Length: 281
Image (cartoon, rainbow, N blue to C red):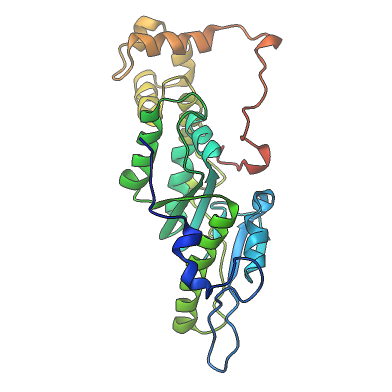
């Protein structure tokens, strides 16, 4: 079963908004102010998005694209809309690397109307992950965090969607506060900012252990008190923690006790580009 089956691509769905024109070239359905001048659509984008092709396509559509180092989100479309974009492979990799939940929490903390965009509809079979693992992540996005999640066909489809949302948002903002309404980069506070608390750093370390997510990391830390105490715990000690079974305890002990060798080094998984990494892991 496919994780999501939107009725049509964003490009087709919003074809009428283009006034019948293709996505390339200026005048891509830009609204007009009183007097006939066009309202310029502005999009803030993180500098790591340059290689995705989406910023270039937004420029082709007539948007003013401003590139910055964004602390959270890949695109800012209005004062309230921040967008995290991932390819299907990036999305699955983020789940495996245990950085998925924190990224979503940061996005929701920073913007009243967060949006998650996944490029590519085929999620199953990308990284030898069970389909239920992916379905669980999608359910977490939409049900637990209440973050709308949309699928697009590729960079051009993503740009079409972002342009449409930015146009709707900024046209409304201009009517409300005038033509000088500007986008701002949202900074995060507390545990969501770049400077993590000690507890957040401990949770990040524990969440990287095999079969240990955020909940089990909390249980482990509460039971042992420190990571140092956990590191010397036996399998018999570990299974005393709620949610930790024999298999999980064995995997944790193997990771902690196995001696590192140079042969343990592996190539970085495909699609996990360092240029796309932020300080949130």
